[in-house]
Amino acid sequence: MKTPLTTPEEPNTTLSIDFVSDVVESGRKVRVMKVLDDADRTVVAQEISMSMPAQRVVELLDLLRTVT
Image (cartoon, rainbow, N blue to C red; front, side):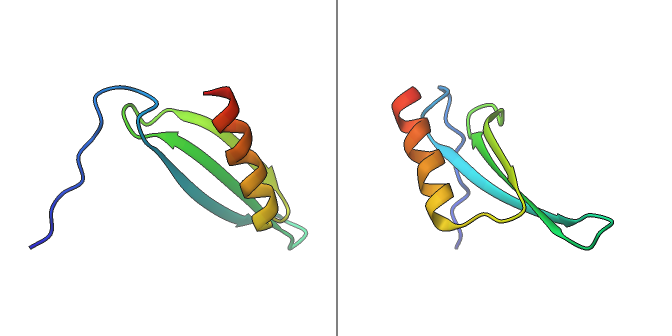
C-alpha cells in the first residue's frame, strides 16, 4: 500500500525540483528548472536556459543552500 506524502507545515523544510521544457518557434528547446517550497508551493528559484547541464543544477542548489 502506498503512503501519501505529507506536506510540511513550516516553509523551508523541504524543497522539490521541477524541470519543464518547450520548443520555441526556431525549433530550439528551452528548459526551465523550478525549485518549489513544499509547504506552500511557492517558487523559491527559477533558472531558464537553452540547456540545463548537471553542473548548473548543482550550482543553483548550492546557491540556495547558502541563502536559506
